[in-house]
Amino acid sequence: TAAVNLPGQYKLYMSIADNLATVSLIDFPASSEVFLRLAVRGEGPSMAVATGRTDVNGAGVVVFEMPRYWPDGSRITQTELKLVATSADGSVSRSASIVYYQAQ
Image 1 (tube, helix red, strand yellow):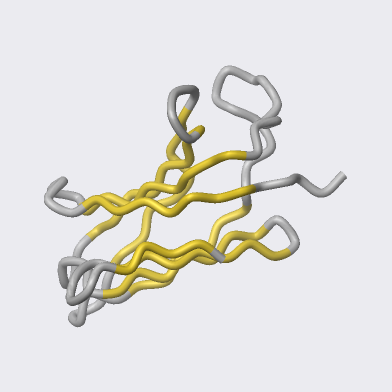
Image 2 (cartoon, helix red, strand yellow):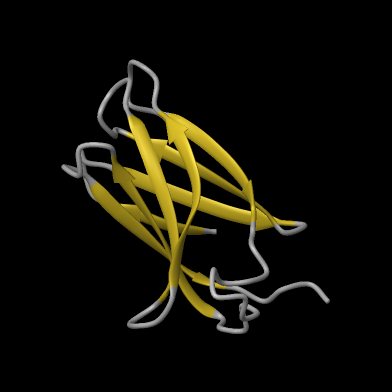
């Protein structure tokens, strides 16, 4: 599980089990769309993986299958990844670092 936890601000929690990622958002903008991108930490490829929506309290849960390939068709072999959650208006962006090993 990875988390970014700033006191009184936007929180992002992520867990992965059986290649299914569950992302919990807390204190994000209320009733807003949120975009999730998976990227290599530092530099490298990235891609959109899911879109979700927060409730009136700014909380939301998004579940998606972890991808096996980057958009260019190359297999995801990197283990140092990050997930970035961004509000639709771009005013909020938080990331969680992930150490990820694909099941064979």
